[in-house]
Length: 172
Image 1 (cartoon, rainbow, N blue to C red):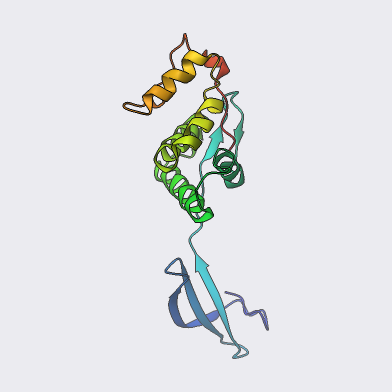
Image 2 (tube, rainbow, N blue to C red):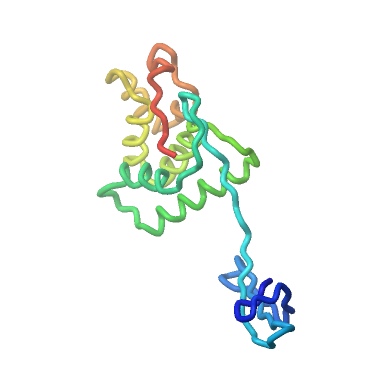
């Protein structure tokens, strides 16, 4: 590590400690040239997979889009911002755990529906109605009936109910 005072390219670590609840390592360093001491922080660089949209376009993962896609259906619902933060952390963790460099927007949308179903059923219905692009009231009723038992939304949509080319892309 270069000394920030004299720019000597080498310094010595004299102390290391965990910081930020174990997510960082704080290192106290001393320059061998000028003797000045300084602190550095080491963090893990986490790379999120890129997102393949339904039209084939590939974009970087954008947590802001994920947050917006979650907060819209959760408007005026009894869900705290801490709960939303936890859900976002949970989704990004699951996406990282896939180990894939690229994931489909559909996978992200399905993951959002999964967490919303557990968090708030009204938000789940709001998100699903836009995400699945229901074309008639019968498809909407089928989705609502599924909330009592098995979830019809976790299965691929029926070709007669929702044409595949009408699937909505998830904002990521």
